[in-house]
Length: 442
Image 1 (cartoon, rainbow, N blue to C red):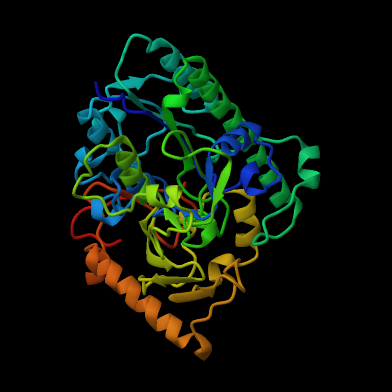
Image 2 (cartoon, one colour):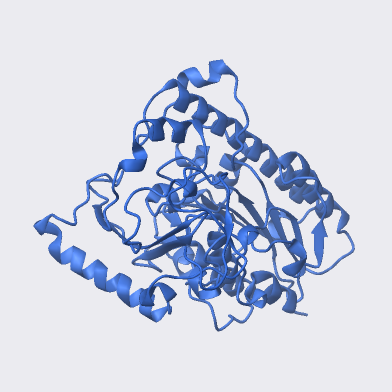
């Protein structure tokens, strides 16, 4: 009799980046810390896009978001070209019971995705999502099929949980933001939300252990992209695409190890199917991490790629990141400053806009030497010492866009009819939107 395949528990948060305890931040997330100490933590993991739907689409289809069609936000009108490319269908065909609770962000309604079980919750905060997931894990006794359970938490998306005034006094402000009382209050609220996320993760993991299935379950904990602060989410900096990624379970994901390998979230789909012994779908563009897990000296990627086309407004850009260098190219000649509707409203954003942020130009090309400039503050494009590196990364990005049939190669990318968009000159995603119709401008 063939051995039973492992379960897969996919835990995912909103807008968290790597701002949790195992990555060295002064943010108490002891349950996530415990998971890291039991599994394998990837310090150089990146999303394929710095926005919600596009990043999740890449992870769950194993293909770049422009390949799969998710170039914007699902609740604003974008869809996958083929929902059968979602990981759940590959696993369902292999005999898995599939279930969803909480956030999913790939379709306007979860029924479109095709999960066998969609657990009803009044909202997607951890107070409702975690108990529902825990109950499902406990109640599935008698079902001999392995399971794929997706548990999506609202945390740490805005609106952040309000923190008491005294908690804001002693927080460390990220280096790219000004250290003001308003920003400290904003960061303290993020910490409160991260602590709530940690509670939800702990509830689900405890239920998994109580069900007796922990040893037979691959647990994947990650987030969609960076935190919703200016200069992070919706940018192709490491602050925008850097993500937490902790994996625990069969296949060598044990022992409290840490990996410095370059990893993209599109690598998770091929890793999971390889571990489970399921045939790889032909569309996968990522690489299995299993060779690296077995031998840390094996690198599966010498570069990762990331993209953004639409968020609340149109802001097309692409990036390639190697271990040492980051190259970003922007493709919108009509708007040279920050596209403020693509930045979530916050006290931190208000501080910058009051100081004239909207008038600050962004270079169409950016090159950063991450060894000397990990904060990505000094653009090396004009520096003749980096001429060779710049040429190589320009060519590499062009080749990737060609190989993946990126629609941005041939000019402006149009949204689908009926998509909701903000104008690029607006200041907030909460300002009035317009409905795109063929032949209209963006």
